[in-house]
Length: 461
Image (cartoon, rainbow, N blue to C red; front, top):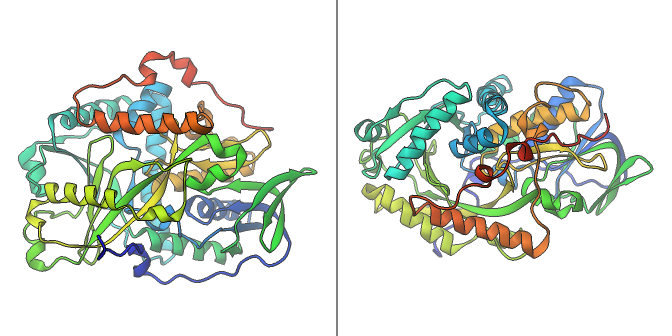
């Protein structure tokens, strides 16, 4: 593993425009904390709606330095296992609303890139969900039924022969092609930041929000070299939301990993059928996913989630030789024709895991606005989320504030060691569940639906 670079591959494909830290005190209508997709989409949509509104973005690191710049670049709708939970918890109307809104965002992101001259290498090629065992085949069949129940257009399950014509792995027993796109996530977030700056929104990098508190009806955001006073504050730090007390229990940070190969030669590419160059993901609970980059590398991502200590988010965990070893092993099994292909990059990133597995947006009791919990599928959902945050800031009741992301009950993780043990148990259960035909029933199968469907308080009108 020593030969692997733990630098993020995507960061080598674009040059960022550095931004100055905040130096001195400032005031604004809205302070957004976090310069990833969530915060930047919120700033963009707010400025579109209210051009005269003063907005400031503060970022502890650099634009796209977190999950927004180091993910696999899959722009997709809610995954099948999440659709299952939404149908159980919330019913087909709420599930269908989320599914369709995020599907719309998949297309709108491509349109946004074209309209603003952002070369994010967007390809609306679709996503292949594949099965490599009979249990996964059953999951795909159930997903088709659930999608129909949610009012989504029907799909057709490809058999083994048809599926292997789309992705040449001898392990594939079937596949389902769903809507989705691929892109360069770092180029997207840099382009989005450029658009936001052109709208008149300053972005201050290397400006961590050390404390966020309400004083005399105003929000006070303290940073190392200045204080921002704002009428409203939007918390958009995703897996790092836990550093703020009001948000600590609302999501759990977990680590996930990806690897990128050296560029494949024409001879190596020819060994594996992949004519549509779609993104590919298996149907395990801890799924692995593959895609080709524009320079013909293979990106292989996913697998187990990892938790370290007391919800540890330290950047040293970006390197994890155990995770890299497991990923490489699964890659060789899925693509045996590429046993000689070497990996050049490997790194980890934080996932913000919500208790319900769908993103969460809303207001806390103190009126703090938040958005997080993408659970590994945030590119498209954060675009929808930017519209939700816009409408929450403007206190408007719209189709976006009526989505399940906002209106359904948002159970919290237990605090301290009990919450950590609960997270670790879930990871163990899912890991074992991927190996067994049946495991424990989901909580929703045992509990009354109304327990999960309560509408939470949305703060003051």
